Amino acid sequence: DARLSTEGACGACHQFDFPGKPGAPMQNTLVEHAASSFASTTCQGCHMPSVTDAGGGRHLSHAFSVLTDPSMIARAARVSAAWAGPRDLDVVIEAGDVGHAFPTGDMFRRLEVRARAVDAGGRVTASATPVHLARSFADRAVGDTSTTFERTQVGDTRVRAPGAGAPRHVVLRFDRAPTSGVVEYELVYQRMSNAMAVSFGVSQALDETIVAKGTVSTKGPNTKP
Image (cartoon, rainbow, N blue to C red):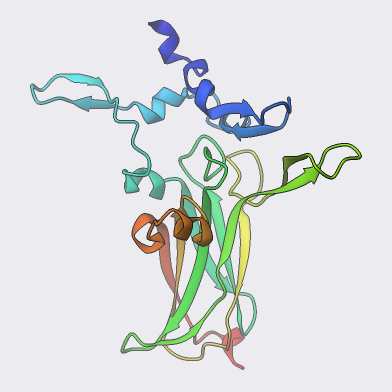
C-alpha cells in the first residue's frame, strides 16, 4: 500500500495529543521533523534502509531498530567539551544525522550527560553531578477545581533537530577541581528516569546506550584550584 511510504503511516504512533487537549502533543516527532533540515527526507528514508537478504537481493528493512542499533543512536549527536572554570566542564551537544529532536518519541526518554576525573590507574578522583536533557511535565488543576488535573509540558531541554536551533551547552560541575589525570565525559541515552527504571525492575546500567564519549585533560590553565 503506497500509504505506508508516507509520514502519515508513522504519525499515528508518533504524532498525537494528550487526550482531550488539542494542540498539546504527547508525541511530536512529525512536527519536529518538519522543522528540521532533513524535512525533505521521509521517515522511511532513515528507518527503513535498503538491506541485502540471504539470497543477495535488496529490500527495505522492516526491523525498525533504534534502541537495538547503537550505531544509529551514535549518529544522532556530536559532542565536545572544554573547561569553563576550575570545576565546570562545558559539554556542547549538537544534532547529527537525525531528523527530529533527540531523543524523540516516548515522553519519558532522556539523555544523561556525565563526567568523572580518573588518575593514571583508573581511580576516580572527582565526579560531576549528571545533567538530564528531556521534556518535563507537570499536573495542573483544570479550571477552579482541585480534583481534576491535566498533564502539561513545562520544559524541553532535548537536543534540537538540525536546523531548528542552536546546540545545547551543558555545564557539569565537579565536586572538586580535577588537577591530575584526565576527565572522561559521556552522553548516554536512557528510556526513562532512574526512579521509573526501579519501579519497572529495569537495570538502568544495562538498559542505557552510550551515544558519545571523550576525554579532556585536567592540566589546562583553568583547572587550577
